[in-house]
Length: 346
Image (cartoon, rainbow, N blue to C red; front, side, top):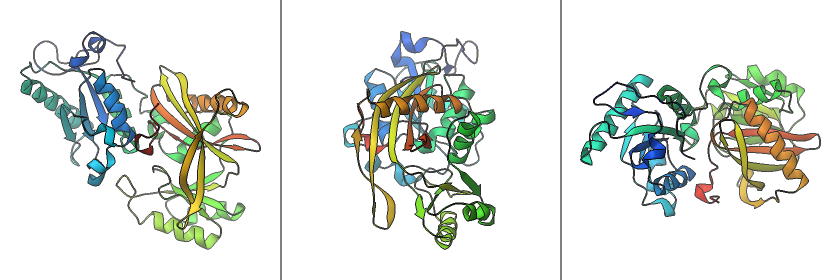
């Protein structure tokens, strides 16, 4: 899963400074630095696999990332020995250029501590270590010239759950009916046209954070306002709320990994979600699905087309899809390895 750049690019000419891209990763993993943006939960499992293969890792923590998410409680027990050559916080006043300059500075500093020259490390790849790091991983990898999904045009907000549905619908596939707004008045007409219950969620969240099945207009209005007032699980505050039709059917998760637009499915699961503790969507477990089954074939075919529609050409993803009476329909695409605190590592 290491993102080695196919382009041969070395910045800064001769002399000092950290190299970017190039073919050094294949030749000497020890010099090939991998950036992991917000590595926690399963991201640590990915980092552990990278480290086992001899690649050094630098952790990049994004602006507004909740400090408690960096704590040992969000590192799987089997990854407690994972070490980074350096860690860097993206400060509030930094631009992307500032972040890149400081990453290169920290890489040179780490090299000197090892008794190596400043240009010892070659930045060979950059990937998201968790949901909060997806956007920055796209921006940073594109900026550094390493393998990237890009962050321009239609795909600039591919993590936004409304944008995801719009792109899927534009590609001619089944997508959920929805409306999004910063104020309740912007979604009221949609809610009046839908049959309750309806689903309300943040446009930017992880897991079932903030997701609620609302059975009345008053309940929907109350939860809409609640979402704009509370802090998200990964830090920061919601600025918009997404209202969607309630999809009926079993919900599945499809784990994939992609390279240069070629997608491979690594596992398929059916969720066991039940109402509990005042919430309609509580994870009780997951059951594997036989890859040769009809439902698996439908889900894999649909998910691959969704990945194409979202411009997901590289890296790990997992799609949540409901198999409705009219066929598969995307709930959301998560552009990083599945969570579960590392429990689903093959």
